[in-house]
Image (cartoon, rainbow, N blue to C red; front, side, top):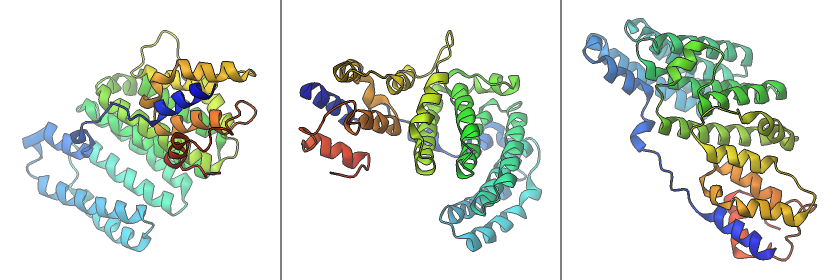
Length: 308
């Protein structure tokens, strides 16, 4: 048993071979500008200046420097008069997203949610001429879920998380326009967003709700969609590991051990949850004899778990 657990710990220590191309992290505006090229020549300088100013506002808001953020936000808002076709909808989307974050920082959650809904509508419109623009809705939908977490609205947090993961994993959405446009989002971008969404939601949820297990159980029960191709079977397997329960200690550990090859490929928050199910659940496994092992200490540091 001890060796099985240490094998699992070794798998959790490994780094995933999956690496994102750094260039894919460039702002969607860069892709928008590149796609339409010469059609933007007249307003290109103004649009670049808007992006510079709005990014400064966003940085200040993230640091909760509201006065400085408002200074740059109002300055950026004055530049919105330069938004025009063929990127009017896309630029309006980006501005609404920043305005929503401003309201989020000011605890104006209902206003922020409405702005994000409107921003997503504009993203759908822009994607009619530039399909790749639809990729922005992942982050904006994630921000809506952050609002539900802040409001401690567990029902919407869970239902919206399931819907967002269905979109990223399978390309499923109730809006046919979004579902169709999302086909243009490259697999690597979707995998990167998948990791980002899972890590962000799980960590935020744990800090706001005490019923962390209920979240995982609800997600696990709904995440698998039969007969639909998924971009990442490792994540689906990870959710099934989280769902697995056995009253028999040896069976429980053996099940994780048999599937340990997927552990390095999972988002960090999922790794942490699997780690805690084994090492911090005395009803399942008695790990007292190996808690002092160097591997276990390192993993506790990695997942920011208090050392005992």
